[in-house]
Length: 155
View: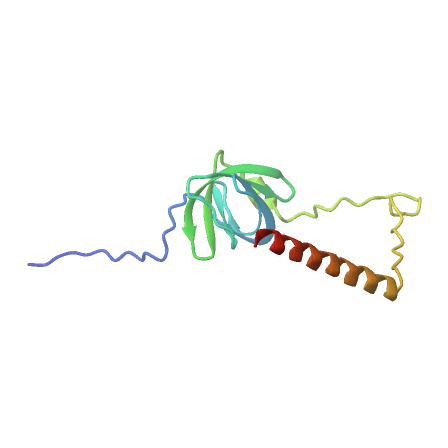
């Protein structure tokens, strides 16, 4: 009796219908547990994968910053080695996938006036060494006196 078998490579669990674009760019992922710095490993019309040391809950809703296009809402669908796979709540267009993280997101400021810091750096004046030493020794002596007084009152 012959049995027919089909070999499936479990390491390549790619169930996406959309083509992935490698990105490898930093971004911010926001969720219930706050904001996390991540690297977007790849991006498609239906989702993305991120590399992060942070822990995310499978099924949780997150928001990812797509450089050049704003934010998109997604759901964490699986954990992969070193990160997570997420599915967009609403698929993004091919043009977003093609141009996300490809543009310069820094806005150039053009002005003829010289740039100045809004506030001057405060000048820090240190006390002389003898005064600092006196404060340290004096506060230590007061602390030990307080500890001794509490110890006498308890016993």
